[in-house]
Length: 560
Image 1 (tube, helix red, strand yellow):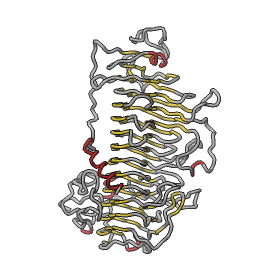
Image 2: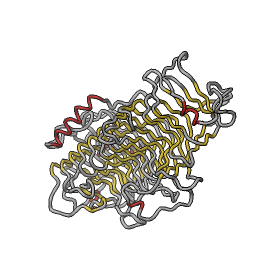
Image 3: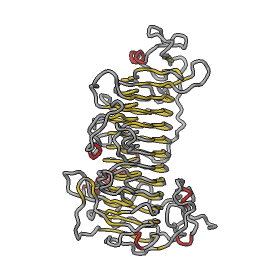
Image 4: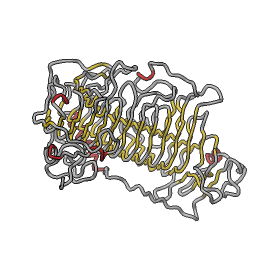
């Protein structure tokens, strides 16, 4: 009953927020008569200057910290210059009509590369603490190690957004930032073999963009991170850490997140997050000994009402987890749709325990789940589909509730030995309208999130499993208790198998799939369904979905 009440409250709160793609052309007005513009130049500036003109700029970023900024004020850094140090903005606030802006600009009329903030030795490059209505754009940040002895803090972060004393932080925009080479430790540092097995890492790391609000009574909301590039950080690229869903209404859009030592994007304790059109590749990178070496392209924990769509999640690495995108425990209403997932060691679909009303739908998976337990230090098998009962090492196992997996196209060639794991404490599972092109027979394995699922004769309850296309009967584990009640077998002859574009998985043999799907119903006992609706209006390419859908993520065109 408590779970039903919680879901009802969660659904009612959706009335506060729409997951329609936000208007990214944010208009920020200024008032020439009231606003001030401050200039900082590390070569020709002087901190004794007034800083209000290019002719007499400040020299250091620290001079800005002494000023109480007002709505519409601007801080201008010089293109092509390197600033040693960092910029800490505390209790600075614009307003809805007049944001405070921090950006890089041409000094002599000739455009150059954005200004660089090199925060080596320091905890962060840019700090926004208890701030609202601020835009930061067109700046390059890097912070690699230290030279001044042992550091007295435990992280190095390019952009840190921190809630402390303000009851409400709101309306922050980060765009066109370039972040690379953020490491706490110096080159040559090596992590012990056990570090990568810990849940999130226990040592000191470098991060890209981090939002942190650990006071449940404080609210951080209306944050947009867009068109940024984050490469080579020793842990997570974009990290959201809330408490009690006190980070809300966050948009993560059109970013490139590459070669992070940990996850590409990760969020905990958040609500109403929209993640779209991001390119996340090589998360869990271990090409530098300072990196953690494990991480999914994206994962959620303890979060509600998150829409993840139209992203690329490719080449995730690590001995555990390291899926394209996965849903860790204690979440509800997580929707993963219209994504391209490929060559991720951990697999395609991973949903841990105590999750409610989550879905993977209209995604394409390419050769996900290559990892084999016991090989090269791996402590988990890679899996095509995994429903786990793990909800913390001290809690009784409880599988996800009301999980919808439909209209995905899953391709695995001869290089992959596909595995499946379904915890029998899961309740309410729909698997329909998918294409399982698995060249090798698939195998049933036990889930192994720190402590393995246990074998028993108990069967999952409220399962609807029908109308899926399999390459052959062995594409589904023969020993699995749940089986498709209306399977279809055959090869749809993909346009360009092994390719890394969505259109490569256009079925050419459409008679096997066209209008062979079912309309997706509510799972028995589920009165809520999913965000928006179960019926999708468009497929992954934007083609209309008819009343009788086809199988897989791509709907055949009417003349096919």
